[in-house]
Length: 466
Image 1 (cartoon, rainbow, N blue to C red):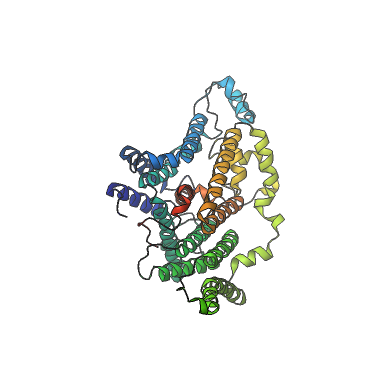
Image 2: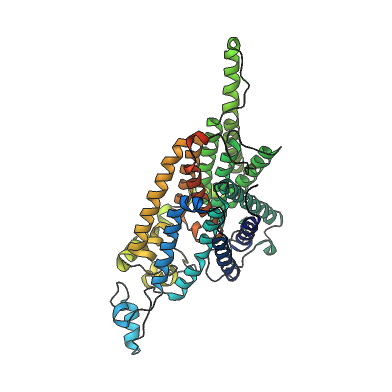
């Protein structure tokens, strides 16, 4: 990591430890939020003040930074008090207007239906902002540093999950008071988030191990592949359907990365080309076959032992009866009701109770929509939709640029986006601080890698340790 200022490494380690210890829950009322949000804003302020690698890296990441600042502005506008006549005229505010009229109140109110939740969301935006500013300060070498950090967090997650299993799921092994007890969630509170994060890390491991001409320490490949196997085993035990699906994407991508990687086979004389070709093909395809054989073998073993909970949940459950699918019509109706300004970030839980139908009432409740794509449109309205389209357009452009660096970079980008997009359709992983940091690092790392000239494809920075 030569060439990187030590203060930036200290800030990086601070944020990494903070999200690892306190960033695994998406709930607004967790005590850990009171710790991680101030730390994130402090790190963001110091990173911005220090300047880091200079204007070049900030220029490479200017669009995600501008889009994050735009989200910050949208959220601020959602909590600014509006005159009574104005906020009562906004779409969907009739219930609040009726209450105000019945008590004879004409006070000003913000655009947000639940201002306290939106204020919490505003405070939480310091977390992805700190992650982005830190990466910009680390420079182009930071792309590989943050990818390695994702693997480190996933390894810690898998290790704690294994300890949770070994302890018989003792209460002391969990970091959060509200969590999926009896399942190996690791440093997260939600098993889906834990499993999906593991899937993303498996993809990153496959990419780091298969890059050609990288600078690695002795035994790093064995260490990374061991982490890969441990993470995959924890996902199998976890019971998350989203985790099982995204792990399938990661496995397929990892096998493709291994197969498409350049084997380190010595050149042969012209007369022995046939033998050399056979060995080259063996070196090229054998590792990918081993990965797939290991994955299929472990899945078959778990199925025969009746221990693959996620698969049982997929087979036994009727998708139409899953609450995630039953509320989709309600969510679409809510989006139309509050369009074009939305309900305010973080307001879903309370606003949903206004629209909840009697047949959905029960001992369990929804704190999130379990479909982050629809919840985003509901809470941010048209401004958020425009911002999302802009982000997807920018990300698509970066993926196209990755083609010039090779198939492995393109595979990393497409598979990573598929994992995050699919998981967000079934759940809300990016609502957790830890996933917000990892998501920003992953996407911005793709942008930095895409900026590299095609002639530099095989000249990775010396900070690479995997």
